[in-house]
Amino acid sequence: QVQLVESGGGLVQAGGSLRLSCAASGRSFDTYVMGWFRQAPGKEREFVTGIKWSGGIRYYADSVKGRFTISRDNAKNMVYLQMNSLKPEDTAVYYCAAAERGLVVHRAAYDYDYWGQGTQVTVSS
Image (cartoon, rainbow, N blue to C red; front, side, top):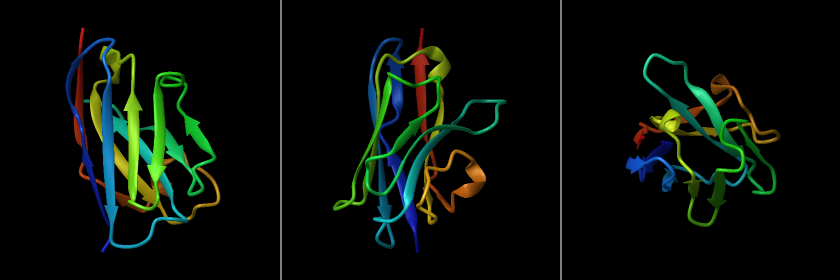
């Protein structure tokens, strides 16, 4: 059974940094696309970033470009989200997701097959 477990969320001041981790288990994720989404209260879940299995292709939402970096370690089945220069508007529950169809980096939530339980990120002003 596929399982995704996020960690690393917390409370940080504006301008600070956090690193989220996603531990994937249940199968080899070498050919998957991995993504991070977030959902703020009263808002829809939105794409943050995604990475192709090879690690060479990444996409970022415009709102996080230049501040967030996604990476993966296939040997450890881990995905990371380094978040720098955090803003209050980054406050949300962050979700790790995995898509079996790994040819392109999907940006729609419905293209992802597996989801973690989420980790809260709160950025204070």
